[in-house]
Amino acid sequence: MIIYPAIDIINGECVRLVRGDYSQKKKYSSDPVKVAIEWKKCGAEWLHVVDLDGAKTGELKNLDTAADIKKKTGLKIQYGGGIRDIASAGKVLNAGIDRIILGTGVLEDAGFLKNVFNTYKKRFILSLDFDSSGKLYKHGWQSETSFNIFDYLSEINIDAIKEVIITSISKDGTLNGPDTGIIEKILKISRFKLIIAGGISKIEDIIKLKSIEKYGISGAIIGKALYEGRLDLREAIMIAEGNLDDFKKDNTMP
Image (tube, rainbow, N blue to C red; front, side, top):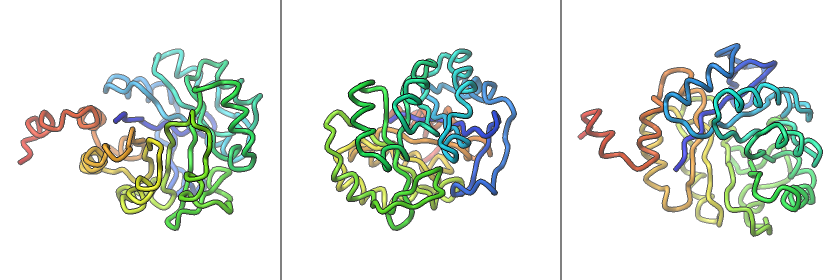
């Protein structure tokens, strides 16, 4: 299981939202590169970078910042927000980003996913954002779709897709813990490995996800909990890598 520290960007600054609500924006740093360097020091190998301006407008707004993070840290980066056509996909990848995150563009045009696959092969990952009922959302969670995550995952017919990011909107930014109930339901119907996002708030959440990793969890995205000091990234990575016994020893857990 891989831990992906999240860096969400608005106007070049590191922020977090609550349930995707742009009016509930909290700024954590004016220097996303500095934040990324800290995550690297803690042992991160990947970063989950989201251009929130791009997700809302459909235009790449913070790609230069992501490219700067890549250049100055050397970390692997998955980047999303505003990638809705093959030209923008190419622009992001040509900037040195390791893989692009596709969401709205795919939900609006099924052919876009196949086009990206045919052009860029494995340098992309699908991201699905859902509410408590399973309904999928787009445009930075501003618009609901007619899709349900259970049906959608069952109907994807591109064999090359092995992994999908799933984000619980109702949990994201709340620090209330992941929606393990719906996650377990999704695991039962999905043939894909899942990267879990939304609500992770404490080390016990990582332990819980690790305990069901064998059913199809390949990673976890952590954002607000890191910025608020609720969760230690080094410890999360230790557990994700399978070193629970070492963690218990270091923290005198029973």
